[in-house]
Every structure is written in C-alpha cells, then in structure tokens.
Length: 77
Image 1 (cartoon, helix red, strand yellow):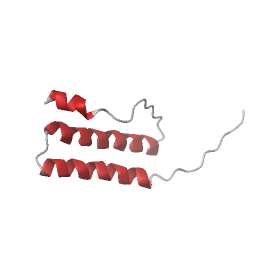
Image 2 (cartoon, rainbow, N blue to C red):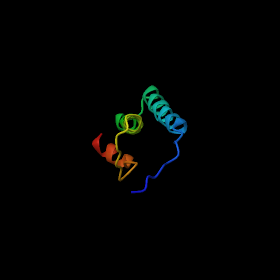
Image 3 (cartoon, rainbow, N blue to C red):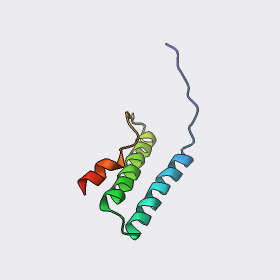
Image 4 (spheres, rainbow, N blue to C red):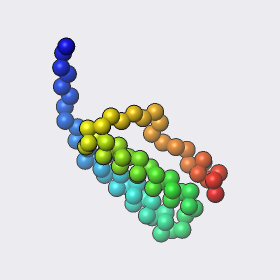
C-alpha cells in the first residue's frame, strides 16, 4: 500500500474568514438588523469554527454545501 503525504495546510486565512463573519454579525447586531441576519452570520461563523476545530483534532469533515440562502432565515422572521 502506498502512503500519500499531503502538505501542511496554512489555516491562517481560514481563521481570518471566521473573524470576518464574527465582525459582520457584531455590526449587524449593533445596527439593529433583523434577527435572522444576525443569526445567519453567527451560525456561519460557528460552522466554520467547528470545521477548524475538527481539523485541529484530526477528525474528518464532510460538507455538501458551504452556504445557506439567507432567504430561509428571512422567512422565519
């Protein structure tokens, strides 16, 4: 059986992306945006934070869709 080696992946940009989602969520909260908009960014940040944590713990990650249409959350308001 052949052993396949993969290069180490730099996750710094991924961490930056999570911080951006957190910042957008905070901005939406400060501006009094609809709760659904705040929730969208909070859940998106949480999702990506869990992906990052899974990678650091050596767990597998399966994803089929990276984004949820925000219209679903608008419909909940």
